[in-house]
Figure 1: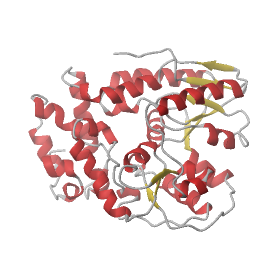
Figure 2 (figure 1 turned 90 degrees about the vertical axis):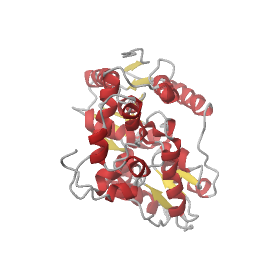
Figure 3 (figure 1 turned 180 degrees about the horizontal axis):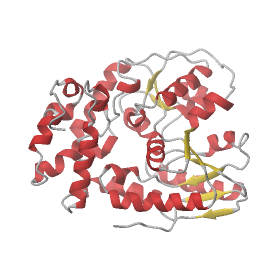
Length: 359
């Protein structure tokens, strides 16, 4: 990184973190792996990859910051106490109480909605075309991945992978952009597809209900390089008879909502700057996003709704009646969702996860 960065400052102009600490070259040159500043600095980055997207010489600073986190954890020097809330959220998602795997006989495809999103409506719709569609309520453990807890992440994800492949699963449909990124990178042997691509390209034939005020679309930062996914989101939005206007930063150059990389727990001022910039670009339009984290964080600065709410209940969504659940109701919703799936179908194989993978 030190040798490749030309210090053009293009990425610095886009990012409050880099404005504070300097170019990727400067950070690489001054990082020692020792001392409080070196150990904590990488955790203040949102890992959103905007720096990577705008770099004229195609280097990947995000990868450097992630590796710094991994080294800090591996050396036993990282203090993750401030990210305890995030790790507890992840731990609940993988626990016996909240997890559920339901695989019908002959099933080779599952829906993986993710921790923060209800999977009932997309599962019901997709089941019309995939009668043996299974369901997996679990966490992909991306929080640990991004915090540098590589051993724990590898243990948890590989155990999930072994169970699914061992029961004949070949295809994973995901609704969460973070889960999509994890399965696409690490889910060897799986064909990973976004629910939005499936709905938009193959099976979704809705009626155009009405014309409404234009909305704007927040692309998830973890999906900034996934053009097919972004195009599918826009196709679904248009399919409801709703026009949209792009913000200055969209697609490949989208902005983080502030949740990325868990930076909000250690540097709330830096993470919060993303929402400040977004608020200026929104210009009083309603935000539609396909990331539950974006819906939660940007909902603080502008009217925001999830794409699935727009698809399945557009009238309520555009009227502002589709609300984002907040803790502790999110946990109650997940328990109710698990109860619903356990009782609505007959499964050839099912389980609640008991593997902990603790380091």
